[in-house]
Length: 72
Image (cartoon, rainbow, N blue to C red; front, side, top):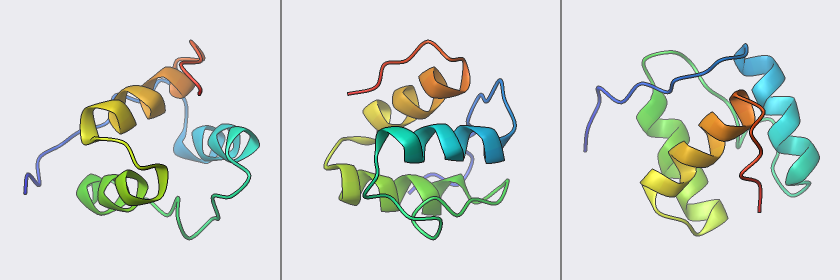
């Protein structure tokens, strides 16, 4: 497991989290709990919940952060 993953967020996490929740109503605040430096925990959780690979989850989060909407 990599512990040095950095998410390239262009918006504050609180904003990104709300945008993700708008698109994925089944995600809770605890699913989206995130602390800088603990990206691995967040990504592992979301991989399982979203049934996607890590690169897809990272691209999804970063696209929402950049508001380029790869949502789906």
